[in-house]
Image 1 (cartoon, rainbow, N blue to C red):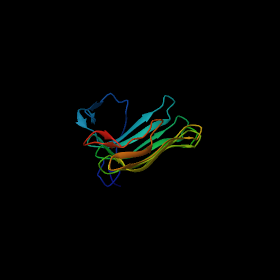
Image 2: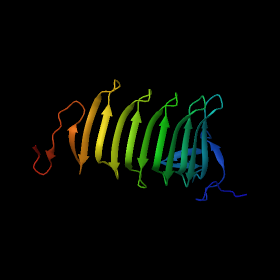
Image 3: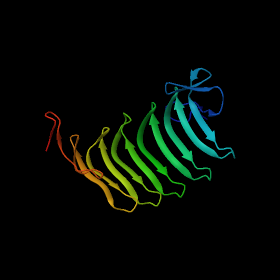
Image 4: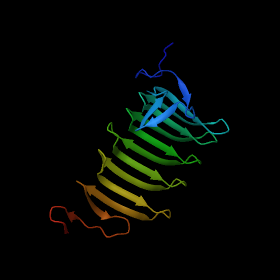
Length: 177
């Protein structure tokens, strides 16, 4: 049997986040003054698991999962070297999807970024390329009416942005078109 939980050679050990030997310094998790490698769990007062996160050398590495007190999933996130990567998904207590985000290996939004109201109605549908809005961007009000509907191309927005009129700005000359 291996003493590691995954191919990154993360030690097979688990600790409760309430352990007083933990400290967080500049985004690095330490245990007894050494960067921590292993699993960290957090529990509700009734003993139910609240979250489980994997760490390597003090930084999140692998999955970070969360649950509501009733036991249903709250979120699933992925990390590499402390950066958000891949698909991140969250759910409301009623099991409706809350969000679904995509990240590149640099921890930036990349691809589809979606959010929903608790009734399952879409709230936001944005598109990103390497951390910047690019392409179709839409938002809706709780009553289903469009709140924003615009296209971002090369950093410029065109269309209905919120309740304001949308103008294209010439950055070099600071002119409105």
